[in-house]
Amino acid sequence: MTVRLRPHHLLCVLTYMGRGYSPAFTGNLTKIAGRLAAGEAVDIVTGPDDICAPMLDGHDPHCHRDSVTNRDHAAARELSPLLGCEIQTGTSLVLNTNIIDRLRVAFASNQIRSACAGCEWESLCSSVAVGGFDGTVIKGNDLQSKAEVPFSPA
Image (cartoon, rainbow, N blue to C red; front, side):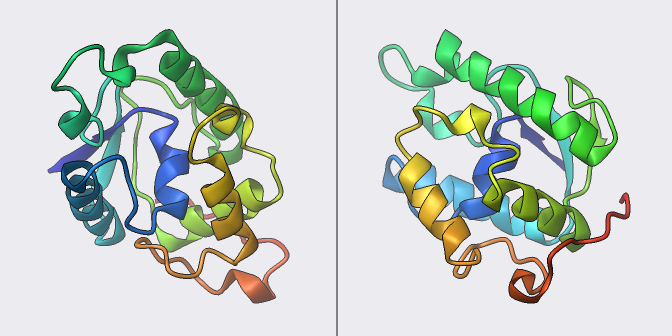
């Protein structure tokens, strides 16, 4: 199986600590983060993904809004050169610890944060990054002692 993610959710999973919009959303994202941590592959999709699923009920879910699509475009634009592949619909990758660490170094230094501008979770994610990503569901290597994490594709 694979986890279907929209591009900006590649950033969200870096700082996920078990908080979310609702208990259903949090339970779902915790399961997805566990699958990613176990090495399950990611398939990049356009529009709502596996993380969005609990948010799609109700009137005018934000997952369909232009502002969220714009976050996806910004994330894909910044992540593509960092990951060495075009982040677009159909791209597959595995978020191994080397990739997680590389993304977290870039996230903590604000190199891949334009998609986060205006997000209601931005300050929480910033504090998680400042705290060395301690307590996140998806673990990496020890970033506290690394200035640069070598990249090795999955």
